[in-house]
Image (cartoon, rainbow, N blue to C red; front, top):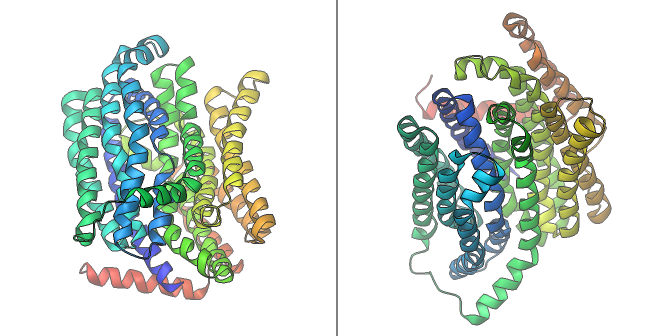
Amino acid sequence: MKELGKWQFISFISRGMAMALGLIQTFVIIRILSVSDWGIVQIASSIGGALGIYQHLGLASASTREISAAKDDSDVFKVFITSAVIRYVISIPVAFVLFFFAHFIAVTMYKSDLLVLPLKIYAVTLIFQGFQSILNSVIQGTKRFGQLFIYQVVIAFVSVIVYVPLILLYKINGYFYALLAFNIICSVSLAVIAFKPLKGKLQLPNKRDFTRLFKEIFSISMAIYLVKVIYTNWEKMGNNILGLFNTPATVAIFAFAMLYAKKLMSISDAATDVSLPVFSEKYVNDIEDFKVSFAKNFDKLFCIVLFVGAFASFWAREIAKILVGSSKYDASFPLVAPMIMAFIFYSYINVIKSSVLIPAKMIRDMIITFGLMIVGTGGFFYVTSRLIPVLPELSAMAWGAAFGSLIALAYMLIMISRTIKLTFFNIDHVVLIMEGFAISLIVTVDNFWLKFVTFPIFVALMLWSFYISSFVTKDDFVYLVNKVKVLKKRFGFK
């Protein structure tokens, strides 16, 4: 557990630094582009992302699982080649479809010729994106976490350097030129990091190896693939549906709130970078240790995600005004709290999926969980904005995302308890979520000094709640303080 905690802490630091750089980049872009231009970027990205996800095939998580259980380094490259072949059987046709149908999608469906070139560039980008997640799984599966975390920070710097100049020069199209250039850089960099330590052990799979690995990977990858498709369409649902009936500027308001809230995913992604290979190995070798270790680890991740999410919403208005530099996205603030809660719930789903459902191969329940998420969101939006119009469209979509992710999380918890007799979510978790939600609603208050005065009180209240629930202990606080001291000393601070 100490080793797991150490690498997760380092992962949070690296993801946090990368997220900070990503926020700076995003808000610089938002300052450069008009609201309408940024809306076009978001619509094109949503269309490309919704189609691009069909190349995913669940191969990254399935490959990580196989590589982490590999007995020999020579098997690692065999897993990579098998996964890459499977992926490009899908990636190349998807890229061709998006490229050649870009004009139809842009002009006929979305009534905007500004989308044509961005969609074509996105199609070419898909070819390079295909390698990245599998290369990433090689690094994760071989547990070279240090190299992975350094890469995450460095590539975030590279992203800023690539995106900002191109957007300044070419505006909307510059964003997609940068997307292509950045993905080429990522693919080359990851290939070097993944395979340089394995030099001399890179063996191609023979026919028997390929068949065996194909069956092993496919036994779980198709379920993960379907889940990833559902999740991506859930995430893009707001932009894609609202874009059909509203102006790009209106879509941009919703997209701003979603983009801000989505930064929470950096926390759960940081955890799953470590937990997927570690818990996959534990589940196979010692199921009882797996249950105890996961429950303790989940409680701490639960607290971190809730704390960051609640106070990210608390200060969203002030952060946005500083970074955007104007009031052009003020209309998005009422959407922040429900979108934050949606991504808090999804962060828990993401952690549980990678740490329990994938190692335990709970395929059916994983698919139903994500199906409920998209059905719940779409159903809530339709009922509250169309059937019984009690909410404006943007609010209906934001609250729908929170509702859909909540019912999906509830189903997942029930099925894990029934299937593998693992219960780790109780009334304390529910009370803490209600407390975090109440704090997140303060985003609607436009009074800096009132927030400034009450902020320490809310922080102390939440930390005390974590402590009395026993999710966080005195030892955890001492561990955190010691780690901060080590980092300060390492970077030359007194």
